[in-house]
Length: 557
Image 1: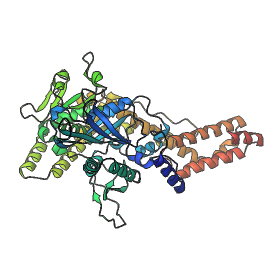
Image 2 (image 1 turned 30 degrees about the horizontal axis):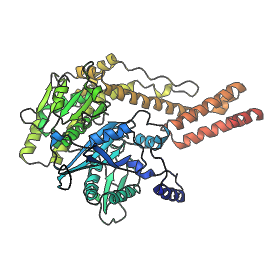
Image 3 (image 1 turned 90 degrees about the vertical axis):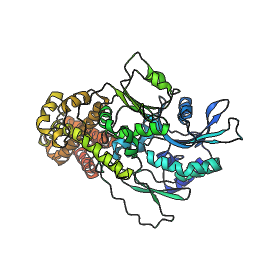
Image 4 (image 1 turned 45 degrees about the vertical axis):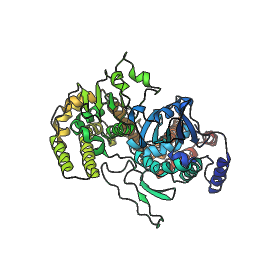
């Protein structure tokens, strides 16, 4: 669905520029590669929180989405946030908003991006810069306003860095400044995985690298050398999405392994924090702790009692849903007391995790000692974070590698894929069969951690994360078999096969080959373009061997 309606002068300007550049005429096309919109939320004495400004002016947000953005853009009054505060939220899009055609480019981006950085199709992220300062000219005595970037991209570091540049200027100069920023973003190149981009805004050039699914997990991809000498010199952002894990987890290091297991299993968790900054960063850090595995449950970095899902998530008539909620309002202490896992942060006496959960794996004391030694030696936070990130990555990989290895054994043998038969099926996943492989090919090959790995796998099989992982891998394997079948067809001598076949059989072959070709293009199968061309030529050659009347019919269809 085109998220903008009603052409304005900006649209006409863009259309003429796009036409001259030979590009499709879509208003705000480049802007929408990065952001859905920019909102300014203010506090109105009569209305409460209200959207003062949306940019582009003609962006389509439903009333429900606007209300959610209003409430999620202000800290709870209990947080006592004076000065400037930055945090993030995530909200569910209204039903019926998503439409296939508008996501053509997103499909391309999502095919090349790491799973954890794919564009959201059913949720928006909100990145907030909130200012609350004393102001005697205002009735309440305080200036309260939020600048909010709404996007489908989980680029928390990039967008929070962008807000640090534009928000202070906006609060001083207001709308003309915001319009200029949006026009600058509308000139940015699109986020292409694997590329290093220069993004100019307000006299500063941010240089970022967009991660690719081909990057080695945990590796530091080399930056593309910039040929031009940029003036001013770019501000290089080391990451567009990674948080300071050590800062997020420092007060709960002894619970880290338990939290990793809870994330892996998609367990319901409430994070109670004194500020939306702490709640949102902790929730996002927890979700990233099982990377490169995608967290397939819902998560809300900042959640309020005004949220449209409040009743759904606080009902006591059924078990809590698989969701992580970051909250700051003390009201939630009572509301969520029946939830199985509650993480409390900020208050020294009350901090910790409240749960009856018993971990499957034994605690890794060596990691805690190493990090505590780092604190004593005043090791920089980014180094401590790198240690944590590496540890969590290796732990997740130790868990996933045996599953990947078993999954590979379910693929049909390449020699069993022949051109004249339907491709063989992938064998079904058997939990018992997988468990039998763990004695000789389990996590113990790559992890020193002891414990009940089998029990952890059994519980994982019942989680949404296993379902999401398996569906994705099965789809990839099915596509791989399709590719092997296409290659086998292209290597076969089709013309010799047709010599002793009836016209009906030959026409049937042509139709089936065409269907296969169409499917390969529609689903973007990883097949080389020359293979597509070879098959296309085969089809034309086979058609030309038929009588003219049949050729005419087949060329028409």
